[in-house]
Image (cartoon, rainbow, N blue to C red; front, top):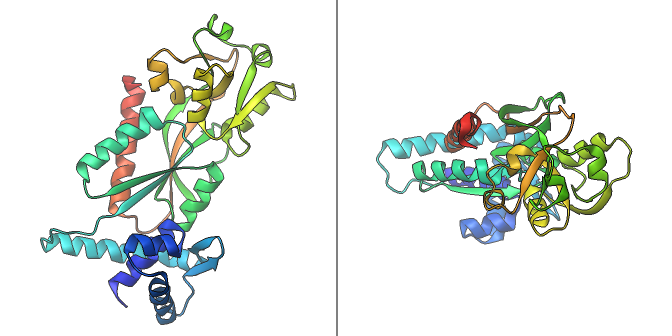
Length: 303
């Protein structure tokens, strides 16, 4: 067994494709595939499930992945201790529902990169179910997801609460909804509404809030960032967690504002999740700590 075989498996898992892994590793795809198969024969298990849509970790592969990561981290530590100057850089992949990109994600990634200049951070926007699935498969190291207070926490993840906020109505400052201190549900029924697509927590929340009443859904979109842009362009209003709007560049420039929903006490949590594992890459642990520290600063007045 060779260290590069384990690195190849980690790359295929992270990228979800033999082709993309081969491109990153600068190998031919047949050579990479044969190397992986040799490792599978040596271990006596199929590490990957090969499909037309890409390669994902098999059940056996997921069980062995923490050990593979542990070996690679041990090799990295050995190289660092020996004074090797060209230590293999690690990529940390973060899946996010785009709920706190500017106020939280950007400062955290900036601080992390200052301390880890050779480690690349890849940020992937996705729906919550896709983030959970990819975390379990080992393709994401960390996931940022929304969670409604009172819902059950998934047992297969370590979950850390970063931010706690409330749903608010995001509008332009010249909107009639911005004239008062809060917005009622009846007010929402009378304006074009920009909803999150099915699969987002805020989609479920809005339908629960309206309780069967028919809103004027004019648009639906993927994620808060596009929703805020559409609001700024005057297409309607949207409902988001306050921590997704406060501190956003559009809000700081006066293109957006937000109001609480009258009588609404629901709380939305921004959670940082990672797969439960015996071994976690050091870079992912470090970024996890940066997220927690940055969120603490936001919660004490940085937002």
